[in-house]
Length: 118
Image (tube, rainbow, N blue to C red; front, side, top):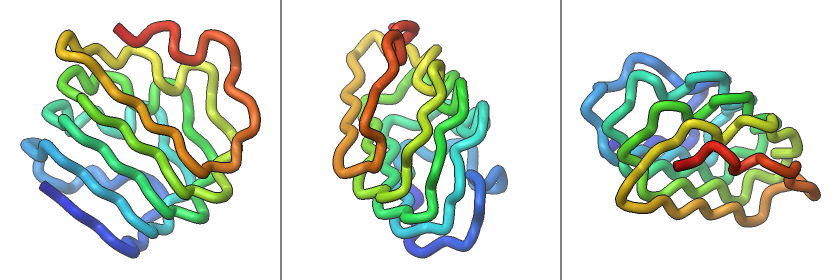
């Protein structure tokens, strides 16, 4: 498990162990979740991104390849307004996936945004 509070990075770091199963990012200086941001962390089962006030966007395929993910929580990211149409695409988990989107700044969820989650 990695729990990072007040981390000073604009995008998801790529130098953490690839074996992590739980990643918690709280109050970090993230600006965006880039395409394939978690590619190195394919064993993630829980991903929590909370209170990252500078976070503005989720790029397409941001969570691609997280086939073991059971929980994705994006909450209290007060400036998160831009969610690319395919941001959640290509997440695959046969055991079920819970996505929690709470207290973010986006007001609209585009049609088809969850289409290719399987």
